[in-house]
Image (cartoon, rainbow, N blue to C red; front, top):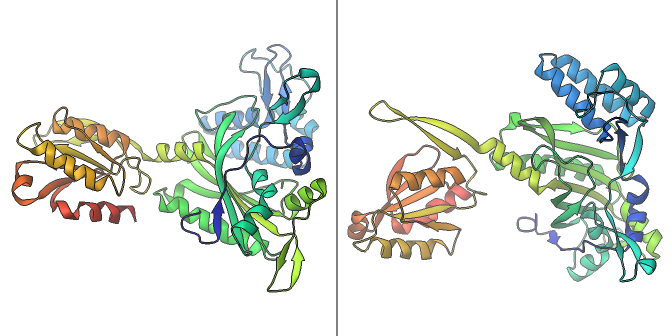
Length: 425
């Protein structure tokens, strides 16, 4: 966002903000999920999680059409805030508590997802504040500060990566849903009336970005929101096919001028922008892109992991674990191995390491047979391994091995950096 777009800048906003921030944003009144309790087990569940689990059960039993119908009905009832209908749906589907195995449910109620704590050394005088449930509001309250100091002209964006906290009743599916997670969000400020055009642009731009990281197109899809959030006039999710089904990976929302207008109202400070092209003051509209970094990591891991069977020249087979991560985001780009611990090979390998490490992250290892070293790098997704042997001392060439194909070729040491950088482009 910030490196490849000249009109997007980054900030690092506070985790603790004035509690009125969350009143203005609507989180105090509206940031909640429908929950239900089982009277026998005393366990609390999100209603949509119970229904989704039932749909997954139906799909696993070969009733894919029934599963889709169930999810569609859930979306319709959630969009209408029809809690009576949702409660009836639980009864009709004979959905039971996983602990007590009973359907002795309470009525459905809304529970706020924000964590609260006390600010102040004396309990009686302390004020209630909240851990931020998203990073977006830190961008909105800093809008004018960033716009003026960075001398930005609309359209422009503000992006940040940071911790967010949500009081999820059930954290589940490994790191897909957690109470503490890392968000990457960008708020793009535009002239009123152009927001839906920019919404479509960012929708496609973000989809193309996921493709550029090696995610297959068939594992991604758009899912339009049935029920729009209180601040939005358009919203879509980019969903990824995780091992447990298609789930939200990233959201793109047209937030209108809701956020800036509300913060302007509650703070009493103007948050308008003077557009010199049309000679007019206005509150900008916003298009948001929001992705969970932990979910992104999980999607890359899910898509990249393979347990591969290799047939050797003698006809025998071997197994290797390999992560087919795009070289763009592989944590280590190049591993450098001297063939032996003597004859000057470690010295030459270290020299290569020092030169390459200035350009990208490298790894050096001399322990164990070369095959074992290759396997270790395959398992963490390193796209290239270089072996320094006795011929390297004679002609300044090395053997480079490609992770996915396991093909090996001889190249000049001076061509190493360019070869790796070309793969990262």
